[in-house]
View: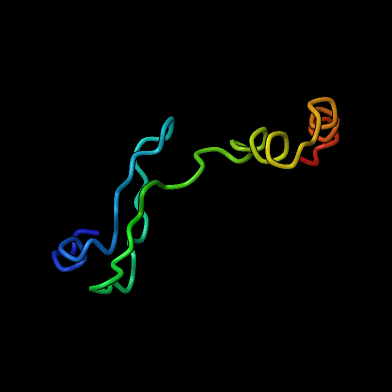
Length: 75
């Protein structure tokens, strides 16, 4: 990612990822004048990081059921 043009256009971004360091990833392509877009974060740092929020809080699955699903390798 040393190409001067790639860096100037921010085609490759380097974002901090908690617990992992820095992650290089594609920027927003194409970049449009009126709607340029943006990358705010690299996404979840670990698989399952948001399981409690999604399954428990948003879908209403009880904690005991979440534990059962974990024990069976479903989540």
